[in-house]
Length: 188
Image (cartoon, rainbow, N blue to C red; front, side):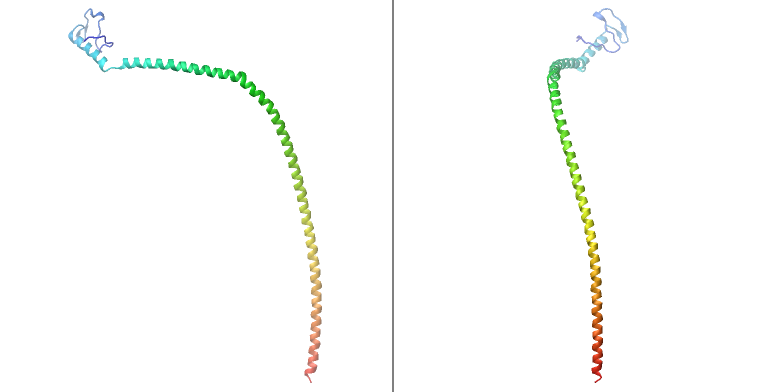
């Protein structure tokens, strides 16, 4: 059962070509115990140690993946390079020229709009100032009219009060004379 194993058990030395006998810790190199240990090592590596097989499969998968991925990425990078060159050579200068032309027009329109807004704002402020001045003048006029009205009312009130006092005095005098007249007749 001695196959082509890749590992030697710990503590044993493999003799190249199976030639000369060397002494090791278990005995002679060609002894039956040494052969059994060697066969056990090979069985163990074939049945239980799958690292070499897995490593080979992993290397194959990584190699295939990188080759396919590398080609795909190369195509993507070439497409990107082409798009960038086209953008830099054609699209970008066209956009820049269009933007410059339109930007000048936009700036002129914006300046005209700003001037119009400033004029409208000044007109509105002047209109508000005139309106406020008119309101203040009307308010002052109403105040003077109210004061004149109140003075006139006080004057009229004084006149009415004077007439009332006079009428009251006349009535008192009249009643006083009537009482005298009644007093004369009541003595009869």
